[in-house]
Length: 207
Image (cartoon, rainbow, N blue to C red; front, side, top):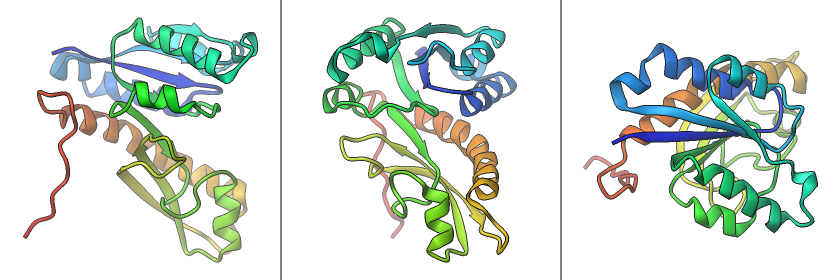
């Protein structure tokens, strides 16, 4: 059965581009009937839109500034997403806080990547907070999105060592390299792990 992915971006779209590249190189559409159906941005000037078009992916803009409320924007955004009948919605640098109604609408098919080893350092300024706390390692986490920020089920993680000379910027750059590696891996694994009911199977520990 065909599985469409819709990716939401706000900026340069490097994680989106990494997922699109992996999909092309690994033959997701040919092997698994999985394709990136659209890339949607809340900012008309998002650099990732050009990257998506260059990759042959449909693009759309739902400008949050055109809406009087967060709820109105999320309603319009959901309409644009649902036009592509998505099996999965992927947040890739989408810099908007989503309303509970939006999150509920895509429950079980909404993923995000966060630049820390959750549950450590949810929210913003993760790299500086890790350095300030004296952490020896940092990293990134792919997780399902729930109504509560950065606490959804963890799907994949990558660890990055924190160097004595690190700044937030140098650490962020190395973490981003790992984001590009694990996000596509987690997206594919999540979609391939879906059972016939459309729900991801629950994990069980070996006995």
